[in-house]
Amino acid sequence: MKDHAQKRDLIKLRDATLETLPAAVQVPTYDRSQVTPGIVHIGLGNFHRAHQAWYLHRLMQQSLALDWGIIGAGVRAADAAQQQRLAEQDYLTTLIELKPDDTTAEVIGPMIGFAPVADDNAALIAQMADPAIRIVSLTVTEGGYFIDPATKGFHADHPDIRHDAQSPDTPRTAFGAMIAALKKRRSAGHAPFTCLSCDNLQGNGDVLRQTVLSLARLTDVDLADWIERNGTFPNSMVDCIVPATGPNALGLVQGLGIDDAAPVTHESFRQWVIEDQFCAGRPDWDAVGAIFTDHVHDFEAIKIRVLNGGHQLLANAGEVLSIATIAECMAHPKISAFFEKTAREEIVPHLKPVPGMAPSAYVDLIKARFANPRIVDTTRRVAFDGSARHPGFVVPSIKSGISAGTPITGLALAEALWARMCAGTREDGTQIEPNDPFWNDLQAVAIAAKQDPALWLLQEPYYGDLAQSSVFRHAFCNWLTHIWDEGVEAALTGFLNEAR
Image (cartoon, rainbow, N blue to C red; front, side):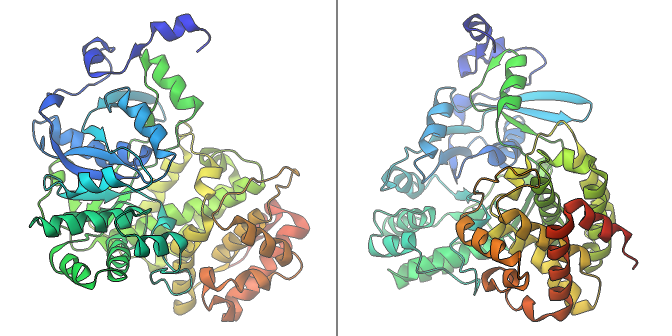
């Protein structure tokens, strides 16, 4: 926007202005005043609004599920800013779908409130204790579940967990707040809610169960047993590429004539696969494209290893080469060929087909999705939290390859690229700003590994005993040395020219 006059020409997104929005923008056809709460969602960012909230919106457009309205929530101080932005526009969101050759927009309205953000989480606890709330869902990032990186068990020694164990009525964490709300529900004679993780974690429902029950047992074993007997934690797989909101998204929504402080851009593909284990009922999401199945793990293995793992292959190389977006990485012939060769030869052989999709066909789908130049998904965003993403998305394929005796050269190169990125400089000499909760530790090891590459693999929380695999260790050390001596492009060329 160039001046204040342009700002005044925009239509402020509110319930009262929906009928005045451009005809090309789809708007809610249901009466939002009739929508009542049924879900609390913790961690209300772009992905939730483009994915889970969109599925619910599609049901509401059919005059269904109006008793499943969403109350947003957060446990970080920064969430208060999101609360204010959304409150000022009646919790409406403009979703902008970016196809390579087309743009469409719709305003969705299943969210009807946001629990006030406070240090003691009292408002959030009260909201979840309301028996009208039957699902509490979360997108708190892969690294937000207090998993001990070495044992994969519950990280009971984390300072926030220690606080919640000592002060369960004024918790800091989302999980402590959930437990406090469940305690109130039990005391009032109400049933528990379903706890639904929507994060990119294999077995995310099992992980959420471990966190909630383990924390509850630190203070109230009887309560933990009640939750375990009566509550449910369905596993789910979620899939949609949703960039962070930046100038591009704001420019697009303003180009439509809409003043939306929190628009969301997204690709045209969505998938949601869920175990049908809901102790207090659920919306009929399957009526608008979600899949309920007992075989979530097969779907999520394909997605996590090819899409999420593939993201790490691209983003780490792109960061070191100063390539800004994932689409630009795919336009780089060596990076894109590295992704495809590794995916087809080292990841796909260990995956099972699922109904409607063979793993090899999924690689073709992902190539097209990654290459969409309209999706401005930054390498920095995708490379964030590598300490959670590499163990979760790449290392499982390495272990499968070692076990099966199949190639792991490209995967070893991917880990060497991560180590190179964590050294904190690009090849053009610019600095890579901290991009991981454990950045300082990672950077120290990465710099030392320039002289002794094997040191990187001794980080047991991320690699376990993989350093004992001579095949993997040898390949990794050779690649990291090659990268430091001759550069990323030379290493990629070496891999692509390697005879199988």
